[in-house]
Image (cartoon, rainbow, N blue to C red; front, side, top):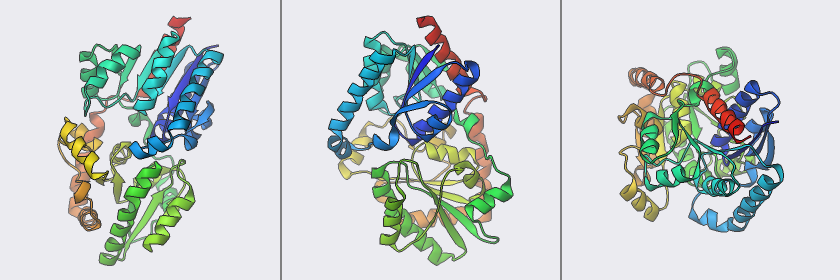
Length: 378
């Protein structure tokens, strides 16, 4: 029996973990897939030994607070590897933690695939060499990522972006409209504050304030917000109560909701690319501590931070960063995208993004190279 261990530390990584597990089982129904993930990995048939609900962290202060549990988790991973001896480890995103797990696996002679690798093309390019020294294979999801890791000496394969396979509505449009609660003659704005506690605390209050301004300007605009599995409903409700703005919460079927929404107000991250693939225009937002923001501006080697803009090679979507991320600016950009001419223009530009992300089948290609590595070990 082939044993594949997966480490995905947050909600976006869990989506890829679930898709990869399904592809592995399709190629090898007898395979055993286990490790860290969440509901997506579990629903795909993988064994969730460590649940992301208990371990997702973001930011220096949060890491310091949870350092004892992070160290324990690393030791628990080591013990699991010793007990169950995986034939291959796949690390998905969550770079700072996953590279430490990869180092443990390398010590044990376990082959490693890096899938959704550290963004060395954006900042800290030296990380590419560190990854190259640790892993057996980098499954590159962007053409520019392939170039960076190849130059760093990694055994790299361009597999294309998995979201091309994953992102698509599953419900008929009428059912999606009903699920989202979209009313005839009303616009629907999707709030996407993030999947981590720190993101919710930082991003949701100004998003709700922006929603109030938008509603004041156009009462026919309604709002909806998905709840990530990592976020308890009480946290979202607490912020809505504090801001005096109630928003409809939906569970699951995020791509169906994206397919019928008109605009998204989104925290920068993978979700903005998911929205783009659904043809949904986004106002991309991000805010962090002032000092950290200064440092990031100094070290970033790219002009844009939004993935759709990076893939397009030009800023087709607005980015409101740091001090620019005010409720007033957010409301203004959302209302601009609700204008029919502007909405049509931006949706045409979003169609080009999918073409740049490679052919369908990325997840199956990752599954094949993972099983090959596992087989070579045997």
